[in-house]
Length: 467
Image 1 (cartoon, one colour):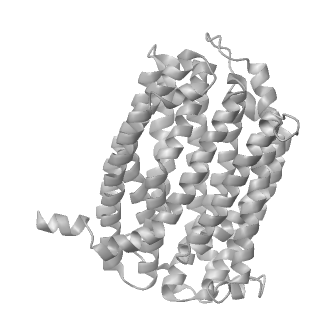
Image 2 (tube, rainbow, N blue to C red):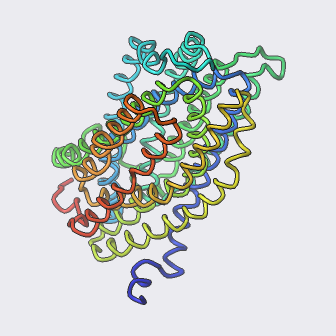
């Protein structure tokens, strides 16, 4: 028992280090999620069609966001390990690769949305027995919102590149401040522009989009400006604009390790999008209820999301410094800490599940279903925390093909087919369908445990790279 305790529970200094990295990420994500939740409530005052229009838009934009995140994460694995080795030029090269990838993906994303926007939104709109909402008006609200949101894609991509590089070097405070300023700007402008306060016209969902775009420019400006004006602290910034070149060996290694990671993020978010699209076959009431549930879930899952990022940072730095034994030890302690923390957040989420849906101006059946979905999500959260932390531990050592199999391939071979069969070939109520899909995470937990214990995932990737 003492051996198990020593393996899973760290020292006071260990948790101090963890919290110094994690708390700024949690605070930033918390404020972002809470403001997003408040934004959602504001839009929810406009009715079910507005809720559904922004929900669909958010799902589509999330695909782009995760594609960018996946693209920069491949280089980010090397960035964290370079920093652990003290190689600041290596960190700068990793950032340049992130910037090149984000430019390409942003251009592709904008073109796709410009030509296929209505087709993408239409995937979520089906004839159903529910009398809640109008497909035509939902399409109208979604296209209004998306058209403006495209302007915010370039600054969002640039901000992801810079903030991720800062975090890989242990600087989590500045991205937190940038995020706080951005979300407060978004919240204030939403209040002004959605409802027409301070003498301005009421713009509805278009006002929500304008507010978000402005907040993304603010976030980007702070992250980029701080990086290039604090080169003594962020030493990699001295070399970012020194040249536009990257070493061939690094580019090759990032391609080998990063391509599966980028594919994983894209395929994973597509699986989530397709699952949501399958749910929409059960009616617009289900779409609205699940949107409320997703927004509440995003408020409460910030703890295990932030702890997953911390796993990647700490384990990556230890691997870069050559401490593979320490990397293993940190991974096990962080996974246990993440799961234990989620039991607390799950309990809080359960306690408010019947209250929060009442803030939305929608039909009673939508609020009732949303409350039940929130309870299911809360009960499944510790499973998600275990899988998320394990994913980042394995990924930090460059086992990106394994994480591809473990994450997105699993979703496409288990979650999506399960949702498809239950939606189209059973008469189960939606709550039962959602519960079965959420708790399919149990099988993923078994796979995560096997991979964590059997794989030689703790590898220093920077040894074979010449700068």
